[in-house]
Amino acid sequence: MNSGGDPIVTDVVVVGLGPAGIIAAAVLADGGLSVTAIQADARDHLRAPLVSPPPTLRSTAVEEAIAQATAQAGLDGVGGSKRLAAPQAYRLDAWSLRTRSATLSRYGALPSDADLTDWPIELEELARWYDVVEHATAVGPRPATVWTERMNRAAATLGWSPFPAPAAAQTDASFLLDGRGVHIVRASVTEILRGSTGEVTGVVLVDADGSQRSLNCGVVVVAASVIPTVRLLLLSGITGADVVGRWFMSHNAFVVHGDFDGQDLGRRHAGPATAVAVDAFEGDRFDHTGVGFLGGSILQAAMTGTWPPERLADAAVGLGVEATRGADALDWVRAHQASIGTVWAQPDQLPRRQNAIDLDPTHRDVTGRPVARVTFSLAPDDVRRWEFLAARMTEWLDAAGARCTWMPPLAPQPLGTHLYGGVRMGIDPRTSAVDSYGRFHDVPGLVVVGSSTFPTTGGRGPLETIEALTWRNADHLAAELR
Image (tube, rainbow, N blue to C red):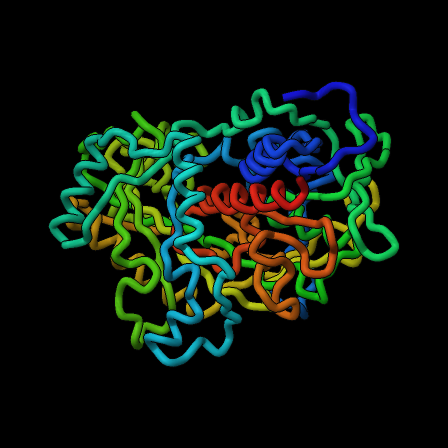
């Protein structure tokens, strides 16, 4: 990595150095291009104030949005939010890429209130890039533990074909930049500049001391997380025929806990990348006739590491006095945490046009620019999917010998770590912003990478798909620009 002597012109500017930005910058530099990567550093709350100011939030378009105290969950800085997460490395299944056509083929109809579209890329093509990522980041299963072996046996007795969750060797992918000559600038990009015919000509950036300058280039690759990506595009006057910001989605993740009555499950001895998973209730692996929803989720029984105080409080939500034998819920969790086992789900959410990101008309960041406004709510099928999956998760814990089970209520998570959409990829410019390579339909020289381009969420973590798709798209872009 190189961070000295800032240029005034470069072939490519990469905005953001999370997992997608790191791969894009590395691949483009390997292709012989001069690459300047711009990364804003976090201040007090893990996010950079000019790039990721707290948005406003509302449930419907007729409500007044409420200012939020914090930004989207995650981390601004080289390495991005992957540094905070379990580096699980799942490949998406074929159904997630073909939800629309597969649903029509099997059931003959689509949900009337959703706006499904297939990905403009085949899983067979993406498989090559999954291979590349898995080799580069040393993906494989973590060693089994007492807890994962117990849940593996329970899943097998239920006929669910459990398997160890795949994970990368480490959470920080910045080693991919080593020796590639990528120039890193610590600053915040506040605008994408365009020429008289709409083509990209550079970016405006603000340094840590508040000074503003421009950097000229022929291509900008936006690799930020979903809300900052959409906000930057809209602040730059880039709307993509009014599709930028639409079809915003989230993994509204949830858990079911079980108590194993004084047995030490040993879950604190490894992190959540160590897990056993089942996919029997993901995608279209079971008949959805009459259930009132599409999709599902991978279910995971994972290690946790040592629980910090806030996790103890979370685990106490939904815990009744019968389970605690009359004790205060938080006190009971604190005393019995070693015997509490948890199953996670990351359920699909269907794209709906009304779930969207735009610019707030009244709320501003510290420089006076509009913050993002997020309009987001759960639909009835989200609740039905939760109820179905929660029953399966409870069944799994029961089969493993849990004395009792409990769970917090389903809650919308528009500011969670797994966000999607807003810059949807597709073939038709009327219903998508970018093509399968992340190139904007109507802005020459502008490319977007990351989960903001996903047409669907899938029911498993997005990290490896973000990395594989970015590697593919950057390789294609490098070949185009040579």
